[in-house]
Length: 307
Image (cartoon, rainbow, N blue to C red; front, side, top):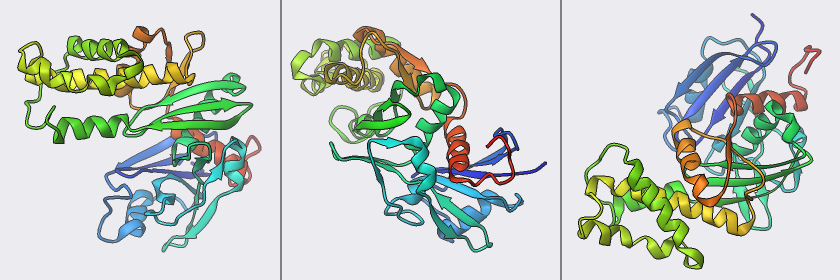
């Protein structure tokens, strides 16, 4: 089988490699624990060699933290507003030890923040490749360690905002007076919903004003120690949705596309009705679809008439 492209979704904690077939489908995939912050002894070169070992010498396209300041090669950002097709015209090429050339996708910078992203721009391209009818006007939520609220118009990213919801949760759960040392528990949907309700009721003061209530509720016996994590999760996710509504990143009259890991996206969808918001799931491997679309725009898919 011909392999016209190898794609790498290279984040800070993991590396996912895709071998594509001639119509842009993923023929093979590999997941390795070598993100830009935790590499094998041989660094980026060794991680890359292991990711593509035994695969044909096809064009290689990589997105994510591989192009960051601490990555394999720092790649300049493109400023918003930025048409998604421009990503393919702004690749940075580096030579790998095995003779392959690796093309790195630039990240995006929103001067209004300022704010930056690496990797999510390729996911946005993938979402709209799969759902082209939404390219004219779309809002996307990309939850994770650093949650992104992205605005798209006429197939261009016009702006975005990052919220450190996931990282804040990890810090509060593991290193604060609210959560450190508490036992792990099973999923407690009631505690999560209670946290969402607390965020929704916080009004103009915001969820930060309700954080310490986590400890008060536990000391009073109204919140089990094993349920603190779910309450905090609900409070932080709920406050993110409250902010999105207040800032106009999301409105009740239009669905928001949610892109990310299934379990985390499910939590956001669970919280959304409290704020009158509708979150719509996105299909398939969005990073892979985005890599294929960027490769086509860059002219890397040689000899494919449909590209």
